[in-house]
Image (cartoon, rainbow, N blue to C red; front, side, top):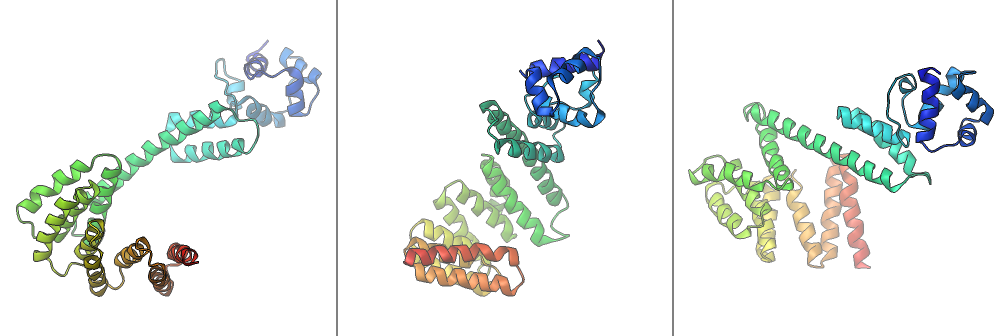
Amino acid sequence: MDTFTRNLKHYRTVKGLTQEQTAEALQVSAQTISRWECGTTLPDATLLPQIAQLYGISIDELYQETGRAYNNYAQRLGSIFEATLRPEDFLRADTAYQKLLQTESYTTEDLRLYGILHQHMMYVCIKNAADLYDRVIARGAEENPGVYWATRRQKGYFLWELGRNQENIDAFLPLVESGSSEVQEWICLIQAYSLSGDTEQAWQVLQQAQTRFPESATLHIYAGDLLRTMKRYDEAFPHWQRALELEPAWQDGAYSMASCYEELGEYGKACEIYHRIAEDLQRRGFEAEVSWPRSLAHRCREKMG
């Protein structure tokens, strides 16, 4: 008995299939399966992909001296991704698992392994995100200051999500304490304190920053957001309004205003602002972004009754 015929029997028994069950799955007779496993005849080459998929292996493994059998094709592709950590291999495995979950044949082990698949991909994505942010930061602010500082702030959120927000504070606190003339460094520290939940410290730094940079739209947005956290609503709205006057194209202040009105139960005012945001985005050609403010406006209309 050669390796190929021995593997046909080996992988069938590992899968827990009888010759009759295998024959039914491949639409051949049980006698045909028996002849394959005895080496009397060989399966047609066109059947090899079906056989491999049924046994949860690759076609090559049918000819290899040793190999591992998988319970299904999704597990096989998941194992490949674990070995390579390539996004394209994740996508193949993810598609196979999605198809498997649409059937009645998946097990709790499949769910566990599918979870592990996503967990591994999460770490791949975290590493890739960190690498990309660091590449932007390494090139400095000279090439494109807007992109550079947007990346620094985004990396701040990224580190906070990873439970590493203290790194943000440690990076920008010495710069601010030395009297930095770069408003963005103050903004990054305010963001770090806000994300840590230290509203009082964030407010103190913001007040100092606004005496130095009174025309910063971003500082006005943070001022409004912090005042809202402190439930000083009447003081918050003028800051958001001033941010919109300084930077009419920015929607952050408008979103904050609408969200605050919604929090206060003033759904009509919130709906109107969300609608204006959607109209502005539509006018400027941001088709993909329009659906979000529209959905928020619809939610407010529903709450109005």
